[in-house]
Image 1: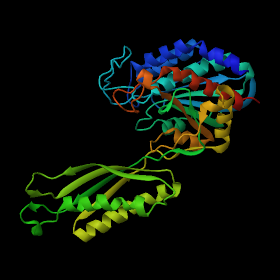
Image 2: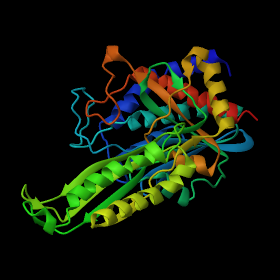
Image 3: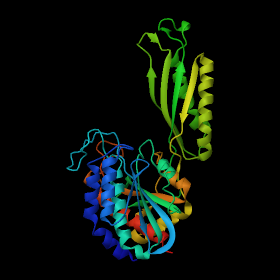
Image 4: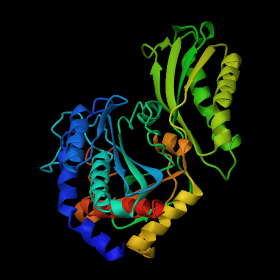
Length: 393
């Protein structure tokens, strides 16, 4: 394999990649509802001569490209779900499903993996082992990676390593972001209920004010970051909703708060629920109200294996050039690619897609989100180059 012929192979299919991305962009579906999306993916895979397995963990699709020589198996993953967002853009390929949109670029992930599949099929003679293509539902929630693992996607044949990518509007088109270690944060959720006793707003001494207690709890929770977290580490404790009360002159007897907790540090990830429980119970006891905490684990930290990260970086540099491969910032966003990377060594990398000249400037999850489609070949070339390097024998 030379850089030139891979460049030509992918370059020749750029229009096809754009067409695929737009075809999937028009039909966004939410987690575990991706029936049209999965059917279309399976149709595209069959057209490539593959025999996809459908209905994996509900709406997942899996296909295997068997190399000409025995060897290891590499899992290549793309997520396929959209978001409950009403698209504002006026592009001709805008969503045809009201209040649903590919506002995070998963349509491009499907297109890039299908494009990589086409190139890898033509290069099976170079492969010592297999490329297992995994089109995963429900990344945006409630999470499809773990159900796919439980459905057996890591076996038959056994998966030895995994790679995946995410289109990334934080980086300009033409750049690939590759970083070892934690790259995306854990994504836990918390619900806190404060219960006091209501009363007249003019007689606070005869009530136990849930609003005042809730305000103190929100403030005290910030000490988890400022006093329980090393200054060299990162964490977020955000209370996003607070609901309760009746009217301006009634002391509320009940407040319900919800929030998110995010960190890269495994030890802190284990400790945070205890910190929150201690703070809530301490504040509530001091103010004469009752507090309960329901803590729900979300996705764990997405952590790249050093050796697999080095392999992807070397493949990307060889294919795209040193200047195209950058060391990106970590992000407090979360990803259930984390489950695959906990099961086997792997690497999750970013594909830059920001281009102000084309209007591709909105952040992910924005109703006007779009991406520079010139980014698609860079993702395909990195996926293919990494796969061929891993399966080089």
